[in-house]
Structures are given as structure tokens and as C-alpha cells.
Length: 349
Length: 283
Image (cartoon, rainbow over all chains, first blue to last red; front, side, top):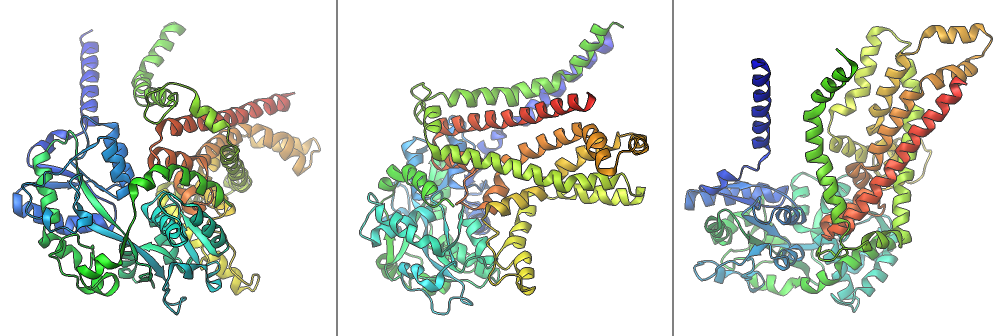
């Protein structure tokens, strides 16, 4: 009898321990640590190398990075609204508006901020300041494409038949490309029809439509595709790995979007989260991130454009303002679901 | 000890796992079913709208049909290539058996992402298959293998092969070798012996292997999307798109439930076929 009781007690203790292990380890975050969900891959690398040490030095507190795609971040915060797994999330403009509309994030208090006023107007958003820009231009393999492409419409040239790579509308890249296409063909964020027409004409040239930008990069690496729309920083990453790939700015301008950082509602550590945003906006951090090998495009006007940024993107802030094309993501979001559905059906093999 | 007492003892040992399943499998499944019953993505109104939306669009039927077809093709390919391997396994020396089993389970020891990336390298325009065919002069321009349905079938057949071969090895191992000799002594040829004796007796292994392979192939999100690309929409990618890209949880949940029921239906069909042919074998 005694032994049975002991066994039972043992089992009970074991299960309690097991349950404790399954609980999220939120407790640690409340003391001097802030959890920031950044993007995967080179973004995480850049933030780990530059942002985290700078924050530690300035405030003596720690940052835990939890790299995820923007939409996965939203899903996680949505699933645990009252006890969110992160204090801060990083968003492309489409997902950012979803997070704001869904009441998942709180605004940034700019009154105390030293750096908010120095940001380019496109990044000065109190709902979540832009800490870097991403731009979409054309990637091409210089070994196969001898003359660098000049215009988006070059993709339709017969010599690129079977060489063009795209992504679907699940990514900002794919959606932004469609909107730009519509714009160039007389459409807009609300009139996507011309883009679908153009894509249909492009299909014979398309060697692959990747399910995400990461998979698109693999296609360049494998020589499966030689030309197509691409995110500047993805191209930089491939170039650094020795893949023959170059970035070209279309004459109509590079598609640009601000990547914003947001404090999550019910965050465990909102004060520290605010401080991390302040650090991320500072010219010191953005300046370091703008250098090789990160080449993250700064939003702070005090950061000089040098190196690859000056060569491929813009030599100064004035040129940046001139060559960047911004889209209206509030309008895009209204129709995105319908576009994705249509894209599924129309590009299907 | 009475039979009932033994049963109870056995049940009690299974309780922790049963509790785990109830908490982490049945409860979330119930939640999924509940979410699928909301009519709008804000979860404010109940209704069967999501199911009606799915069933009313021929595109969705095609996605479901293509996914099930993919499952059958992969299952057939693994059975066709896996059966001889399992057969061979029982006809080689112990040392070779160790080598064979290592080859069979090796894929299970590498991550599915790594295996899938290897297939991208194999199937690409400048991949091994195309380079070899071009060098041999069999083709003039590279075949489109990557981002094709055929490519997905090939990659999945290799990735899921252990799930078919392992049950087959077990089931063929239980076969009494004297049965084949007896069949031969009674005048049956090799094929007749195989069809009337070996195949029926290895059916349990075939059914188990088919169910595992089918279930794994239709739900293989990573391999399907990386080898198939975005122009081939299968159910897992479709669910991902709806749940994460569009944050339309009720529709994604309804698609998941429909997909689960469809897969269950076919898995039960395998089981039923196995039973039917077993009865036939005994008759």
C-alpha cells in the first residue's frame, strides 16, 4: 500500500514537472530582458551582430531574438493576446496594417524620442517607426544576361523565355511586383487587372514561381532562373556567397517599403521595448547596419549612403527620395485575399 | 488474475499517453473543428459558410483531387520500388542485411529539409539528371523537372521510402520459407507462388506501408512546396496560405477538416481493401 502511494506521488510530481516544462518561460523576460521577433536569415544575423550589442551597451539590458516571418509573428501574438510571446515585432507594411487593425500592437511614444524626428517621412509612423527600408528591383545572372535590364518590361523580352523567376503573392515581394506592374500598365493599387493581363503574357517566359523569397534565391543559385524581381538584401546575401547575381534598378524606380517595429500590446516589458526601438532608430546602429556585409538601407537621414548602398541604391538621401516608389498598402490589403485567390487559379499549371 | 483485471492493468499503463493525446491532440482538434464553424474571419457569426465556400468552388476540388492523386502516385511508386528491396533483404547474408537496413533508414536520419534541398540540386536545370541526359545526347534542352508534379512524386517517393520498406521487411520476415517450397512442390510456378502465396501473406505489411506513405505524402508541406513551387497548389500549401498569409482562420480550419476527412476516407479504404483480399486469400 505504501509503495503504491509513493508510486502515485512520483507520477504526480513527474506530471507537474512536465507541465512546468511546457509553460512558456515568460518569467525571465520581466527582469532586464526584452524579446524581439525579427526576421529570419540575414536580418537576424545583422540584428544579433549590431543591434543587440548596442542595446546592451546603452541600457545594460538583454535582448532575446526570436526570428520568424512577419505573418508567423502575427499568428503567434494573435494566439496569445494577453500573454504575448514577444515584446516587439518586425513588420512589412502589409502585415503591419493587419497587426494594427487587429489591435495587437501599441503606438510608439515619440515625445521622448531623440531620433524619431530624424527619420525619413516615409518611416515616421507613430504606430510603428520604420527602422529600415527594403527595396525590390531586378536581379539577374551576369553570366547569362549580358546587358543589365533597365526596365521591368525587359522581363517580357523573348531572349528571357524560360529564364524568368517570380514569387507568389504570399510575400511582400510578390505582391509589390504585381502592384508595380499594374501601375506601369495604367492600373493602381485598386485596379490590378492590367497586372494579371501582363502576367499571363509573361507565363511562357516563367521558369518557376517560388512559394517564398527564400525559395526564389535557391532558384538563382541552382541556375534554374536568370532574371526577375528580387529583394535587394536577398541579392546581396547571394552575392556574398559567391552566386553570380547582380541587382539592377528599374528606370521607373525601385519599389520601396518601410519595415516597421512595433511594441506588442500587453508586452511584458514595454519600457525596455521602447528603448530598443530608440536604439534601432539611432544613426550609430543604422550606420553600422548600412555598412558591409549587412547593407541594410537606413531610415535615419543622418546616415550617409556608402559602399554597396551608394552603388546600387542611391548615392544620398535626395536620390533615395527620388528613386523610391512607395505603394499604398492599406488599399492593397483590402484586395489581397482576392488577388491571391485569383493568382492561384490563373497561374496554375 | 482474471482477464478483466489484466485489461484494467493494461489500460492504466496507457493512461498517461491517453491523457497526453486528449490534451494535446483531441482538444486542439476540437478547437479546429469549432473555428471552422464560424462564418467570418472575425469569428463573430456561426455558420457552415466556410464548408459551402470550399465545396462550391471547382478550383478547391481540383486542389483536393491533385493532392489525393499525388498520394496515390507516391504510394504506388514506393510500393513498386520498395517491395523488391524488402524481398531482397530476406535473401542476403546477415552482413548485407545490416548494410541494406542502414540504406533504408538513412533518409530518416537526415532532416526532410536537407533531403528536399538535395532534390532541388538533382532535378534543377543544371542538376544531375539534366546534365547527364544532355551529356548523353538524349535531350536537346533541359527538362522541366523541378517545379513539376513529376518532380514532387519522385522526391516524395524517395523521402517516404522507409515508411513503406520497413513494414514490408517485417511482414515478409514473418513468412515461413517452407510455404514457397510447398507451393513449388505442388506445381506452381514462381509468379503463381508469388501472386497466390507470398503477396496475400504480406498484405498486412503492404496495407500498413501504404497507409503510412499515403498519409505522409499528402501532408508533406515542405517537399511539396519546395519541389512543386507556387504554381502547383496542394492542400497543405493552400491551408498555410489561408491561415497565415490571409489570416482567414475559419476557412483554413474548414479546409483542414475536409482534408483530414478525405485522407481518413482513403486510409480506411486501404484497410478495407486489405481485409477484403485477406478473406479472398483464405478462401
